[in-house]
Image 1 (cartoon, rainbow, N blue to C red):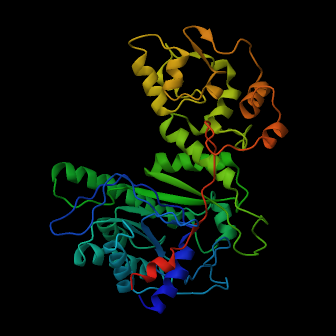
Image 2: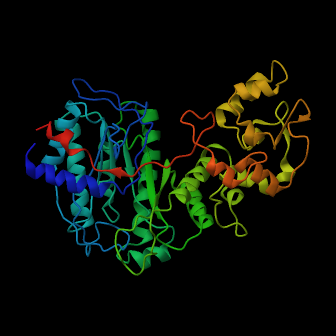
Length: 441
């Protein structure tokens, strides 16, 4: 690999690290005859972390040149950064070379907008088409759709990419107008709607014709920046709920605002709001898998997520009248709402209690976190706590334990093999390790 390509890769992989919209897709693309690669639903790894852990998605921009001047974006037109652009052939060659050397399992491709949305989108589509038709590449492809691109290009993109995504950018159109005045919600929501309708139409077509080509089999996603604008968590969750219900999105990704410029329109923060981002993901999970409505997680009276406790525990503390519930008789949906009980644990509880009444030992074996759940359940009609505690006492006991204070916990030496899980924040994604890539040349 020559030095010019390495320099481009360094610039454009680093610029792509701010895009969080890639994860296991669940999409399945079977290998075609004499093809190369396979995208099975076992999960796709996505980038390189700072400590060098191996992941396998080549995540790059086609270019970081951009005609827009979005205040929160590192590639904004007025930002003084190194610029670069790949050609279509260079991206195809990089992808195939890395794939053949088993460095990657797929491609995540986005781009700044140069010249026009259609001009940029046409080149992105050409890359995907060339990979699929000329190189016979069957690995995973996640393609960012450019807002404002024509419907014809979106249609063609969906025939070659496993997943499409359109970034909604900010939680409200008012903030979008303030921080990215060249963009508008109409140009973002229109392709979302087009993708949704094309996915639905393709599903019906494939029921009639099994060999009909797939359209974006892994669906579509979006991403929004958290912390660059004044919206509350309640507003963000309401938006997320409307996107899931109105546009059939597979995932909404939240990206804590990383200060990349000194623009006066932006908040002056020292570091990204990682814990807030984490709580939003937990809330998202509750809506998608635990049966929570957006209005249950937050409301106008409680517009912000509690950063000390997870949103399910926060809901349970606000709704003490619902608890305790008996694990031997309660519905599956109600057991799911008990803090410390996950989906697997709830299913094990419902399956096992058909044969015998459950005991505390059963719950422990099923993976229930009793340190949290004990205040919200009964077992065979007996409460696990002898006393009823008010909301603040339960909160304090769960956070700090019995008879301990925050300072006592802080002083305790951390155990590398502690039996209780510790929440850690994901390391910042960085550009691929160029020393490794030099070996591909």
